[in-house]
Length: 114
Ligand SMILES: [Zn+2]
Image 1: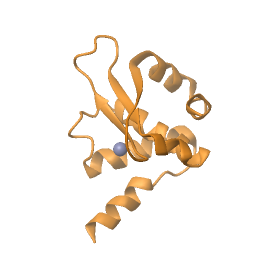
Image 2: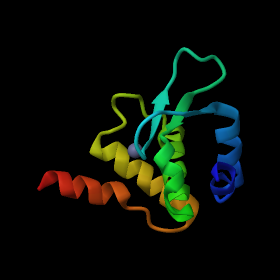
Image 3: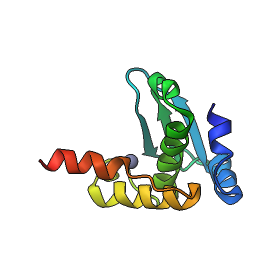
């Protein structure tokens, strides 16, 4: 599932993810999160997937993976990456990579503002 979704991204982004990101499993719900890391020498950060992510549609999984890699690629810092600007930037870059509009976080933030 993970590699199938990863392979939908541009080759240079796949290389970036393979070389610089660590992927880990988390407990709990159905979210994924990116954590930047200054303590790892080789890895720039970690993407942690909660188990429910893998029950989503393949299209959604592709979007989640692209979105989280975009946080890493844009060098968002943990604690800062949940700002609206960072979420929209990650969605925008993920949209570019996948060639379709990803607006999951745009919708989420609109909902939160009500
Ligand atoms: Zn995000």
